[in-house]
Image (cartoon, rainbow, N blue to C red; front, side):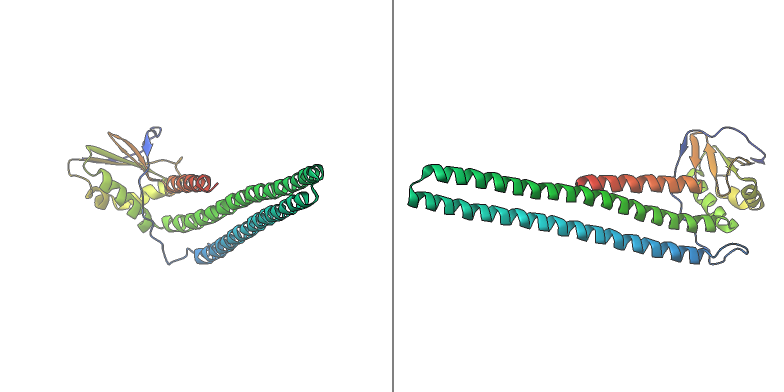
Length: 254
């Protein structure tokens, strides 16, 4: 049994499934060539990666210099301490030895503390720049993915491909209801028989247009809940996972 009508039920209890976008080689008339946009984004992404590598290299260089300075100061202190001890033994002036030793200790403590402070500042600056660079790389990568997916979704064959993938996930349900933007609704209506053949013959299949949904949105409702297969939902889920992973990696190396 099937029907096609408008349905304005609020959307709730959504879950997200993975979709596989299909990239078109054709560029719609009047739109900027997505290949050119993608090339520009790839160039910016590569530049951001190079900047990230440069930040890491500079931070490593600063840290290595600070470590070397600490090692040099320690070595000089050992030499001066041994020299003072030898002089004290030779002259027998214990008081002079103690005075010189204390002055030397304070001097080298101060130098070592300065070196440690330099290391800490370098680490802090390194992690800050690293976080900013990684975030920029992720943003550019997601922007490139969004350009490709939004361009391909505007073509009916790609939208139908997404709808079919979703229907395969729920084909055994008692009822399946699809809500989409009116333009996408027209596409599905023209291929209604093809879509209906995916689900079980016992499934009650319905299609609803909804002006409040964006182009490329696809909400599938079954007795067990609603599936949000909208492109923006997929991109947001990807964005959240990538930034969460980036934060975890950052904490592990901090």
